[in-house]
Structure formats: C-alpha cells, structure tokens
Image 1 (spheres, rainbow, N blue to C red):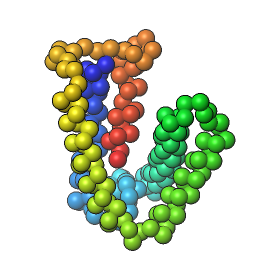
Image 2: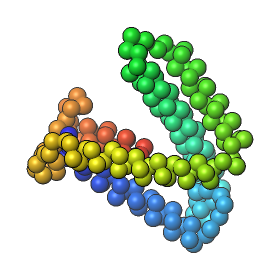
Image 3: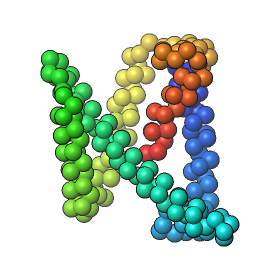
Length: 183
C-alpha cells in the first residue's frame, strides 16, 4: 500500500545513504581512479589486503554484469509491453525476447564504443527531459487524482503481494527501491 511504499522508500534511502556517505568519505581521504577494491586494499589490515581487494574487485565486476543484464532485461520487456499495448493479440515467445535482449546489448556496446563524442549533449538532453518529464507527470497527478487522507498514505499498510507476512512483503518491496537508488 501507500504507507509501505512511503516508509520503505524513506528507510531504504536512509540506509543506502550511509553507503554513499562512506564512499564519499573514502574518496575524499584517498582519491583514486580505481574503485572500491582500491579502498579495500588501502584501509584493510595488511594481512588481508590482497584477498579482500581481490574479492571486492570480483564483486564489483559481477555487480556491473548483473546491472547490465538487468537493464537489458527491463528494457526488452518495456519494448514488449509497448508492442503489446498497441497490438494486444501478439504474444512474444522466449526466443524473440532473447533476440531483442541481444539487439539491445549490441546497440549499447556500439553506442558506448563509437558514440562517446555525443555523451555531453545526450546527458544534457537527458537532464532536461527528466526535469520536464517530472513536471509533466506530477502536475496532472496532483491536479486530477483523488486525494487520500494522511492516515491512508502514512499509516495504512496493505499486503497485496500475496506474502502472508507483512515484514517479508516489506523487505521484498525494497528490491525495486534499491534498484532506483543505484542509478
């Protein structure tokens, strides 16, 4: 429900902020072009530096791979949803989704390889699009939607996920919020 989404977003963002602040503190103490593996090596006890740095480097690499895979997966299913919205009778098969994911991955690699001169303009256009899009979506919602009471929004928890335990449903819903916080 609304309360679960609101409080889960607040607590997840607060908890994730501690990670961000820790990384910012390490970046100010030991600036590096490397990643977390460098800070693990620098700030861990000398006897554990190599093994912890190695493990951190591999976890970072696996995180990059999982992030790329999930982004391609989500984009492929968004394309499928757009096609299904315009043509409800069409049903994608698993091999078509796989081919679509490979095509998206190929375009991503090509764009990141050969499209780097256009990154500044793309990032500026993306910023403008996000700001304008925020207002384009939020103003009609604010004006046209039915208003709920503050009690419903902040205190009424609903489990519509099918989990029997409200705590399990709450923790499961954190996955989507963390995915948004990762950027």
